[in-house]
Each structure stands twice: as structure tokens, then as C-alpha cells.
Amino acid sequence: LSDNKFEEYIPSQFASFVDRNTSVDLRGNTDITDPAPLMLCFLPKFDLANNASMCPPERNALKDFYESAKGSDWTNNTEWLDPYETHCSWHGVKCSDNKTIELKLINNGLSGTLSEKIADLSFLEVLDLSDNDIKGEIPTEIGLLSRLIRLRLPYNEFIGSMPEIRNSPDLKLIQLHGNRISGTIPKLNWVITDPSSFVTDCGNPSDFEKSLNCTECTMCCNAQGDCHSQKETDIQKVGIEDYTRFSWIFFACLLGVSCALALTLFAYDKYRTNHNVPGESIRRPSSTERDSKYALDAIGEGSVYQFFLGKSWLGWTIALATIGIQIFMLFVFVDGAEIDLSDDKTDLVYTWKCPRDQDECENKTDLDWKGWTAFAILMAAHLLKDIINGSKMIVLSGKERHDRHARISLFSGGTLLTSVSLFTLFVSTIYNMAIATSNTEIIMNSVVILFINDVDELFYDTLVVINSRWVEGMSWEKGDDGKDRVKEVLKENSELKNKVKRVESEVDELRRKMTRMEEMMGIEDTPTAPQDDDDPTMDWDKRSTHHATR
Image 1 (cartoon, one colour):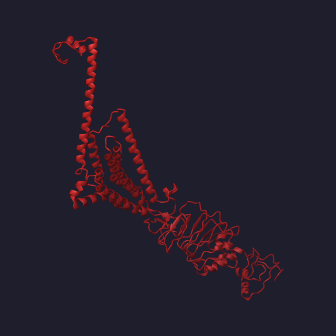
Image 2: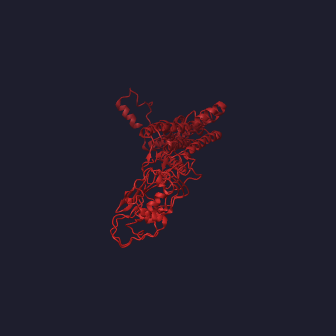
């Protein structure tokens, strides 16, 4: 029918020629209205099949997409495959200059598979097929969509691996959660930090033995549909990989600060002694006994920590073992607080939700400022006293008036008391950040962790029940400290006697010198009996003369 003057649309009945493999030639009919019937464009022998106006390539790609996704079963397929309606009027399709830029068919009953012809929509910017039942693998051709900005395929039944998408420089959103994708997500050099921008099923627990690996994802969801944002923690920003490594650095820094403080105070106290600066630098029994009593009150009379103040090696061993047990129990909570979304052993709670009907994920936690305020009050009430007392013991360990054993005891007890208290505060904070989802839950978690701080007192009570005399022998009050104190007092008395003898010797030498001076000056003692200058019977003139003579 070429070279005629046909007008308007090509009759839809021409589509029946497809089944007959008929050759249709309509060239030269310039007044025919486009487009041609959709099915006619699939006739190999139709001479206008390659005419972009009569048979738009995007319409052909959408027809293939429709058939692959079982379009006849869709909830809404208005205008789809209409012989004459432009594809831009089909439900879910949006065009610009007759080019498809959006394909959004959210919760529309799609099934089947995703056609590889989707790559023919070269101007596509938004592809949103979320909340359907599309199966099979995501076609690799989807990576050819160079203008793609938003890709949403969540809550389908896609399997296999994710294809590479490196030809879409403007891509700002990828959401693939709620599928059965496995393996490793290819790197995209993703720099967008919005939590909802890159979402996959890289969380735990997973439907697979090993969860999806996605290092660039901003949000990881698990098999229960709960999600957690994947971002660097504060310690990771400074180059520390996890909380466990940070804990050891924390202990090292605390020990270094304690040593520096004790040595500085000791050097200063020694300087004061050598330069006669007023202060309690001399070992006085009252000062050392007061310090020891304060140390016992600070460290706790009903705690195995008091064994640090004694000289029993067994007591020290028990106290150190108790410290080790407490730190070990606290490290259990450190491991549970690790934010490793690929590890199913952590206690991390996924508090985010990425709803089916929107592309923004939301944090559903009920924990707010009131819970953290209660947490701060609880921590201060239980730990602040120990932190202050431990710090004061470290300060006392720098006093020169204490012997070496006393300084070691004060330093060890103060450092360990402060370390356990500060570490408890740190563990409580990171653990509640990881799992607390309500104001009441943060308080309950804190109480459980604070209970670990009472283990030293519970062990002491147990030892008392087993053998109270044995405990008294290791304690500061009933051990060898009394004998040591007597020895110290005797030693100090001996030192004072020696000082007095030296002073008396110096006074005698001074008296002899004065006598020689008086003889050289010809001054003789008055024969009358000496009279005290404080005698009220002595008149003023005689008292003045007496002063001059003396």
C-alpha cells in the first residue's frame, strides 16, 4: 500500500498480520497518523518498524517489560498496550519530550521477571518497582541506564547477585532491601551519607548463612525487616577499629596519666622538703595514719580491694583476681555493643524501619533525653564517689611522707578503683547506645552493668563466711599493719632523738663561743644570784641591765 494518500491511524486489525508473517509496505503515505498499532511494530516485514515516530523504541521496550512482568495480572494496567495511545499515557509512565524518564509501579501486583529490555529506556531517571512480586535476577543491562537517579526495587523476590552500576554518575538512591540478593554488592564509590540513600539486606540475622556484603551501604536491613544505619562510629573516625581495641587504649592511657600524676606530685613533695617549703612532708604518725584510714574508707572496708593496703601476697592475689573478673565481665558487654552489622553475635538492636510505601527510612527508637538524663544521674550516684576517692588515693601515693610500700598500695588501689569505675561508665554508655530502645530499658541495662561493681564486696562477704580469721589476717586493720606502724613510730622517734642531740651539740658549741667572746671583751658575770627577766619584782632599769648582760 505504498505511495498512496492514506490518513489517520493504521487500522488495529493490521496486527493480525503478525501471526501470518505478512509483508506490509506503507512507505510514501505521509499523512498517516503515528503511532502504528503496537503489535504491528513487531512484524519483521513491516517497512515502518524502524521508524521512531511510527514504532517508538521505548514503547517496544515497555511492551516487553509488560509481558515479562505479567502485565495482564497487574492491579492497574490502564492504557498499557493500547494500539494508538502513546506510551507516555500508560499507567506509571512519565515522559519528557516523548522520552520515558520515570517508571513507577509501586505495589501494583507485578510478578514474573524484570526484562532486560529495560536498558532501552535510555532516558530513564526513576525506576521504582517496589512492593511487588518480581522474581529472578536483576538483569545486568540495568547498569546501562546512564541517566538513572533513583533505583527502588525493595520488597520483591529478586535472587542472585547485584549487577554493577557504574555508568550512572547521577545516581542518588539505591534501595534493594526485602529481596533475596546474596554475595557482595559491587563498589560504586558511594559518597552520599543520607541513611536512606543506599539500603540493602546486609544486616543480621540473614536468610543466608552469610549475610549480604555491602561496605558502602548506608542502611542494612535483616530478615525481620528491621534496619540499622551503617556509618563510622566516633572511634572509627579517629582510626580505631572497634570498642575492644579502644578499651585497651583506654586502660593504657589511664595508667599513664596515673603514673604521671603520682610522679609529679612525688617530685613536688620532695622539692618542698628539700627547700623547707611548709607542708606535711615529714613522716608524722598522725599524717600517715590519717591517710591510711582515709584510704581504707575510700576503697571500702567490706571489699576485697582493701587487701591492696595490706602486705599479704595472697590478699593482693585475691584482689587482682577480682579486678580481672570484673573487667572480664565488662568486656562481655563490650563485645555485645560492637556495631558490626555482618556479625550475628552482637546484641545490637535494629531500630530503623524502611516502609514499603515510602523511600525514607525512620528511626523508631523511643529513647530520648529523659532516658539519658536518668542514665547520667544513675551513673553519677554509683560511680562518682569511687572515681573521686581513687583519684585522691593516687594523689596521696605521691606524698613523700609515705614509705615505698604505702605508696605502691595507695597507687595500685587508687588506679584500679578509678579504672574500674571509669570503664564501667564507658561500657554502660556504649552498650545502651547499641541496644537501648526506651527510657526504661536504658535504666534496666545500666543497673545490670552496675551490679558488676559490687562483685568485690560479694567476694569479701563470701571469704568472711568461709574463714573470718583468714580474712582478718589479710586485712589492713588486723594484719601486720599495726606492727609496722609501731616500727614506723619507733623509727621516727629515733630520728627525732638524733635531731635533738644534734641541736644540743650545736647549742653547746654556741655557748662555748659566747664564753670566749665574753672573756675577750672583759665581761664578768655578776656575783649576785641570777634573776629571771620575767620576775615582776625587778624594776625596769635592772631588767634592762639584765637583758644587756645576757
